[in-house]
Every structure is written in structure tokens, then in C-alpha cells.
Image (cartoon, rainbow, N blue to C red; front, top):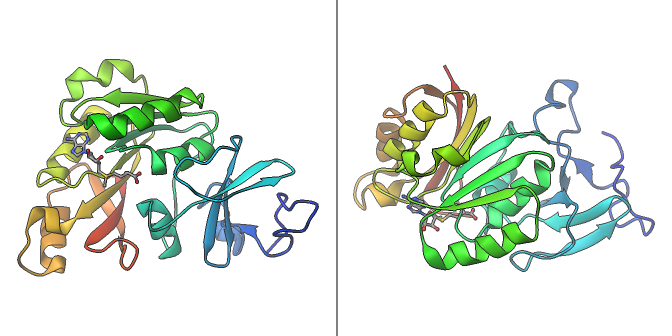
Length: 241
Ligand code: SAM
């Protein structure tokens, strides 16, 4: 364990917070250094000091620490539930399907500070907020489109390293498979499966297994039940075969 270089002069998290990757040597590259954990609280280190969804923000010597709320973001929930790797880097180019108003997008934007977040959302109301967010940052590219209609937005995107999808639709795996086949250079992905969007009956495990078996091109590395933060939602971390 080592001290966070982000501790401020008031000692707010001096000696308590560590980048989440701190620990065993083998784990050092599993999480971006922009993610900081203090007990059960997560933060991203941000260039930006403005709250996006009411989260707490503290100034540090090197920028800001933005609290990453696991009840509002399934990625934060997955990390707190022991996700073993978040394959994002500062220069990553991310295709984000189901961006909504940009809660999780904003944290990806903190992490991939020299990269690009292509954020696809089809509903007008959240998209308006996403536009505001993109206006105030330099690495978010909002796209109002149906994520399944790749030919309508792919011309906008030059390279994708990582695909993230959080779309509560019956055909969520089909949408993912199409994107994964199209953006074939993407090596890593994370897919949220909301089992009750598939069926209101039957065991969650059976539905989840059936949906996971439909994923093509990628194998499932780990599956995380996001309850109690987000019930009936599972985070699948995937890697290309
Ligand atoms: N990922 C967001 C976050 O963590 O901040 C929350 C996403 S919310 C659970 C799901 C979003 O997917 C909704 O905003 C919905 O409008 C959007 N959505 C559903 N179907 C879609 C589709 N086919 N194409 C694009 N967006 C879609």
C-alpha cells in the first residue's frame, strides 16, 4: 500500500485513500490510477470541479476528487462488488451505448482524459443533459441515435478500444453483438444485463446464463451481481476471443 499522491494539504485522505490499484504487485495495472478508494467510497480524479449529478467534490493539489456513487453508476457498484479489472486507460477510445444523461460517462471522461467517449443515447430528455455535459468537457462526443443502428453513427467514430453497454432492452445482447462485430478492434467490453428486461418470470440465474450464451466474439471473464446497489442487474466483463 502506498500513499495517494492526491492527498491535499488538509490531509483529507492522506494515508487513507489509495488508488484502487494499490495492493498486490500483480494487480497494479488492473485499475486506472484516476480511481481512488477510501473505505467504501469511490472517487475519480477529475480536471473538472463542477458536479454532474449532485455528487460531492473536493479540491486536491492535482485537481478534484469526484465521488462516484454506486447507486447511480453500475460501474462504481461493480468496483465496490469486487470487479477485478477496469480496462480503461488515459488514452482509451470508448463506445458507450445507453449513455443517458451522462452520469457514468462523466467518470469515464475523468479517467480517459486524453481519450474519447462516444456516448450514444436515443432518448431526447437525457440527451439534452448529456449535451450540456459534453459542452463543458473536451473528450465526450454525444450521439443521439438508436444504438442498434450502427450505420447511422459509425462514420463519426474512428477507433474503439472498449465497448460499454447499459441498455435495458429485450434485445440488449443482439445490440451488443452488432456493435462488437462492427468495431472489431475493441478488445475489451463491459455489458450490463438487466434480467427483468428479458423476462419477469423465471430464475435470474437461468435468464442470465441464457443471455450470456448469446454473446458472440467475446468470452465472459467475470460476472458481478450489482445488488443491492442495482437489483436484477449483472455486470459482465468481456474479452475478445
Ligand atoms: N449508463 C447510464 C449511466 O450509468 O449513467 C444509465 C443508462 S439507463 C439504465 C439506460 C439508457 O439506455 C436510457 O437512457 C435509455 O434511453 C437508453 N437506451 C435504451 N435503448 C437504447 C437504444 N436502443 N439506443 C440508445 N440508447 C438506448
